[in-house]
Length: 81
Image (spheres, one colour):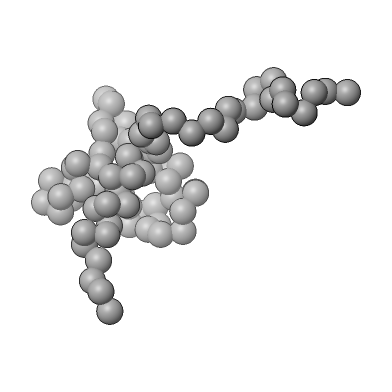
């Protein structure tokens, strides 16, 4: 019987930290319903002209999305109905 306070081996820690959360485009599309993966790739391709650069980290050819910064960017481009 395993102690309930001890996480299983390989289980990710559920602690909340102040570190930003980054996802690849594919990971973001799998986790969230909007935008689609192709729509997100289009946004990233045009990031220099649409202001999304501030929410992206480029490591070589890989593009990582800062989730919090992306949410801020989406809110700044939304219209109130």
